[in-house]
Image (cartoon, rainbow, N blue to C red; front, top):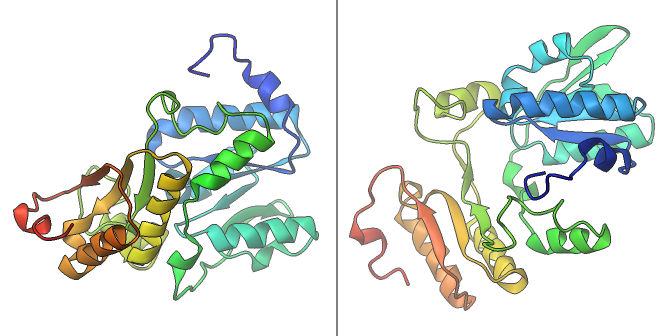
Length: 259
């Protein structure tokens, strides 16, 4: 849409044949676009279902279901990868939706909400694989439709994340520690296995060979965690620029002797 004034949203959506359309409603700036796209999809594909997810969709899930008939489902909370698979299987087999954890849906003119999934290992299903992005772009002959942001082809950047949730309570953030534990998942933050994090970085090197942004404060994760991350990077022979973020200045000790 940003790359061409001739891009026709309705024509693009019309050429997509899908039983379910997933729309990300994560941060509040996404609200206008998310609901307008939902309305367009419903007009063009009235028999298709629309699924929303993300922090804002989760926080306002009941209000959305009450006031937006275009939205059929909301998978509320974080770590819904496994629940998404369950939902797809239920729809494919015309199964009972009440067995899909975290799901908001309508049945018999009433709004229903299923209990969250109690998952002792929620990060197991989290994996960012850029090779899938490349394969799908080729498979569907749609490179621009798969790029993460407008200038990605000229300035590509990969991403991984060390955790879900946050340890801080910034008052302006809908993903704060308090908000996360009360609306999205029972624990915050939930850290990922360092080996999985570095495996994702290695895939970036093997596929797009671009800098990688490591989301999440490595310093706040503790010395043992960040030392393991950097050891894995060294042992795998990864040679990429790494972009890191810190919510509190870490000092030089985090870097001394790590690589």
